Length: 316
Image 1 (cartoon, helix red, strand yellow):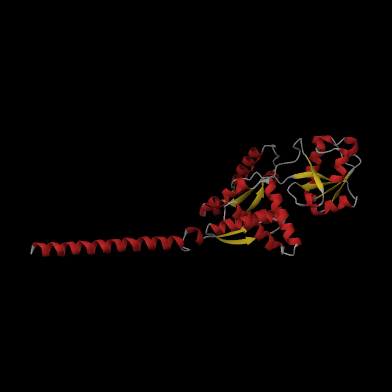
Image 2 (cartoon, rainbow, N blue to C red; image 1 turned 180 degrees about the vertical axis):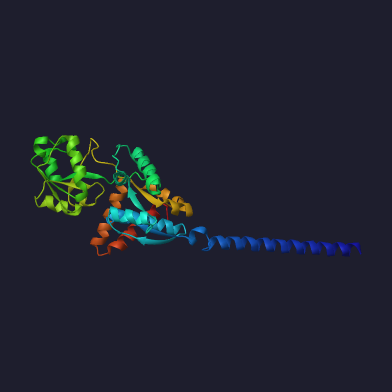
């Protein structure tokens, strides 16, 4: 009788063990299913990402969009939204939540001058925007898309000019410079620091300044230092060895109320910063241009180039 009773008790204990294990397994499966579904906090938040008109800005806007979607956010993308003022007004009004901005542009907005120290400039705009506009600057990238003076390689080589300090004032006074509208003030600063004064400045879109030089309407042009057009047109960027031009490092800027609601924005975007160098921007813009020249629509080319690069550096 004892053996029968013992056998019954053992069977009961075994049954309870099996039931317990089954319940634990179901609970674990249920937890995994829940976290892998669209019920994460990020999936309940919709963000609007804006951007400026140039290719580099559109690439940055696309990268932010892709990374935020990868983190689970719902994202409305508004690439090529407009000029500096248009995009800034959009974030301050709440029409967008974030966009890529540059430190020197931020300093101009605050009415401040560059310190010519990237970290100090970043700290100034970070503090100024949070205090004045309730806008937060996330991590800044080393990429520097500033202004520069470009010349055709064929013209610069015979003169043995590689640096702006090597340009004689007597020669500069005989030269015409083609410059974009936003490049006029930096050009005046450059003239002051280097002690030169150009004969004439003609104003046009930055992309057109290269053709202006080729057609001898000008001998030099003010260019953007990450522009793929420098190499494509056979030009050389003269070294700004006296640091006359301000520093333009990009960073995501986010409405403070948005970031409080969704702090994971910073987690998603900050790892991008250290990987964005000047050379990376030049290479990516070149890839976009090549794709467009091969017949790919610009928006599609930007998406492809941004996606492929983010995957290559392990961010997607």
